[in-house]
Length: 167
Image (cartoon, rainbow, N blue to C red; front, side, top):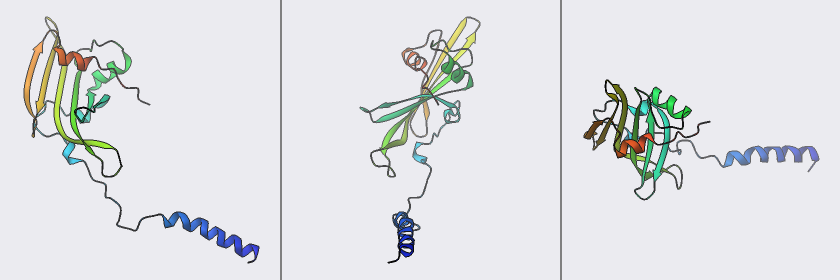
């Protein structure tokens, strides 16, 4: 073969090899929303519309959780190491069961919602008050509610979570 023809053949091979690995049209997995992880029920706020403060995994229980905050809570969490959230701060921890991701080998994604918890900080004439609510079931229903001048054990845990470093 002549050198010029060899270069053309080589060029065509180089271009065609990557294309050969592409799948046929219509054989791709279609993108869908993970509707099983959606929140349903009568919640005091929709935490998935807030910003993320941090997230956590519990491998023993096969759950994943995300701590969300309203604007006041997120601003405080990202700029303070203390856990004295200001008036108007609300945190919400959403916990999901995990399931295998069909699109990515070894990955886990959220499935059914196990619980949604809210902690609110408000100023009253007697000082700061802490409100704690927990929702479970499908649709989500309130299973517990507490309001006190000191945060309960679960509220203390949620208020003590440090903000993840975000790029």
